[in-house]
Image (tube, rainbow, N blue to C red; front, side):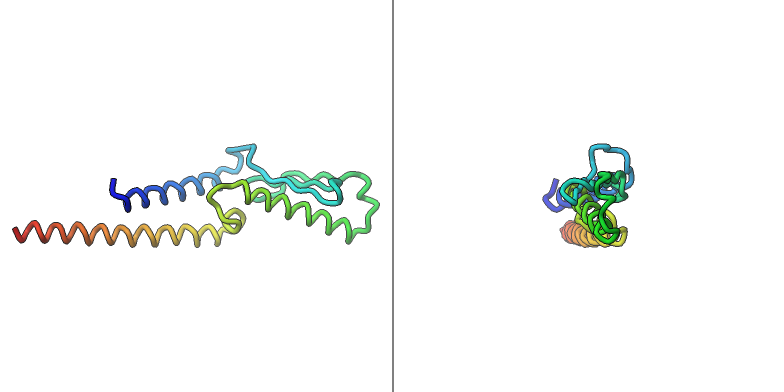
Length: 134
């Protein structure tokens, strides 16, 4: 296979794999992110669909002021989401939870594929013209 054709195939395979990972949230139960705050007293787990799956609060944190507790929960959830993003190969951080980011990424892949297909078609047309000239 020509190098450009191989690159196109690889890009399309990566796009399909990325879509498959985001389209089937429960396909890989091990794919999740976790985060902690307040010295491990607040723990969060995010699933691959970008939604919060678990939130564990040690009873001692209930003594905290509500503003402090909210800040610790937010820190644990954001850490879990960051951990999740880092565990998804081939996806940028925005791609996992932002459909617009995924659309932009796939738009770039599509534009590159179309450009390469145009180059291929131009090459085929040139070869056809040369064969006709013989």
